[in-house]
Image 1 (spheres, rainbow, N blue to C red):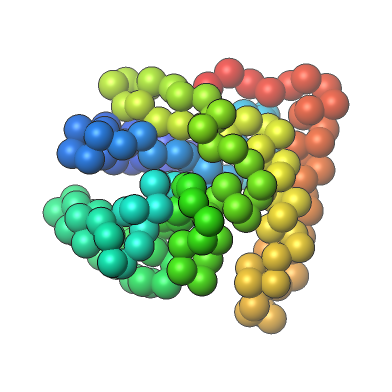
Image 2 (cartoon, rainbow, N blue to C red):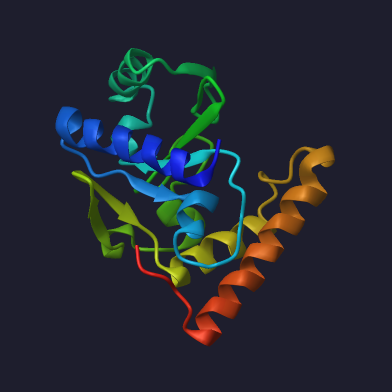
Length: 181
């Protein structure tokens, strides 16, 4: 599946979340970063951040789970909030708040104010997107995060990928090559 198809899947889900939950999801991860830089990142999944009320099991998580299942997605990892449908994987994280269970929210993890993320409308889907500076915070934090590196087999690949992305972002920031959404 190519990046354009992954983006279309995200936009479709964002439109539906806008309508069903009146929420604005945030696209992040490699797919989101791919939209801002010229380098090819080959994202393996779609990363979406939602308000933590939809992330907590004791709050609106069941609503989000029911929604994803109605869209044909199967929950494959509750801890990571990872879903799969055919060849696409989609993973949720908490956008805001102090802590979302064992995993910190995106705001806490990368020390960013997600209320300052640009809001974009594409084909009727309203969503937030990170800036290059915010991506730099995220991937810098990821490269130092012990949770992200808990699996020895994946450790080197993830660490290397995070460091490569940090360098790509720094290059784009230095050259002012951030692309338009």
